[in-house]
Length: 292
Image 1 (cartoon, rainbow, N blue to C red):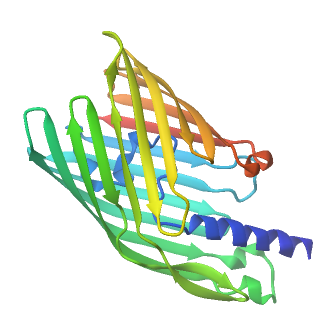
Image 2 (cartoon, rainbow, N blue to C red):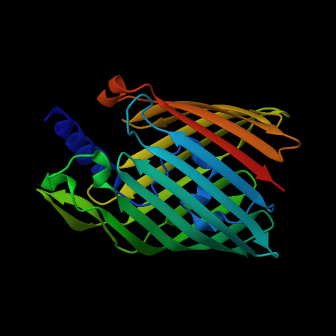
């Protein structure tokens, strides 16, 4: 009976929480991997970029959220960019794999100002393996779910020499997701998620920059999520900063660029400011980025 209650809490809390929206960025190091939520970023750096990221959330909690991200993007000619993004999320018995192709087009507004428009196309493989709980002959733990939900997304990215503004909706189609209604799995709909934000680079000296930024997530019926981020960058190679997700978490992070920034390594440690922070050992996040 104790095990059943334990598993039921996982299903109620973790599956419901992770199903709020597809492709939630929820990365402390989101500035390094914006293509996940905005296809307009594809190719905007002018280099062939490959990024790999790992996030282990709520360390010390069995079955806590685990995320792996992979993204590559490159310019194709003067005005077109393309990329591929893969995000794999696993929370207890729920696994979602988001696979998308990204395309961007550059509109030159002035010598120092460009507007990029982007399109994201792909979908999500959803699997809920209730049979993994090992509980038999209980209607609450039957009915595994496996499906593919196609989707498309849109995005815009305004890039200047010192600042940027981003606006995107990575999934505009309403797809089914998994919920429990008593003993039966039922379908529900994902609400439209809109991300908006921006950042600015302040030159404090010839070698030091201050880089503040903000990212907001709007979802109908869900409290507004806002990330406030600030960092100091030395010699365009070493970064040290902090991220505050209002009423949710605080993170500190660092990154270092090697071989003229052809390789970037980043690490973030995040801890919850809510009561759930008392039941875990924080969140660890790693990224490795190559720019060719």
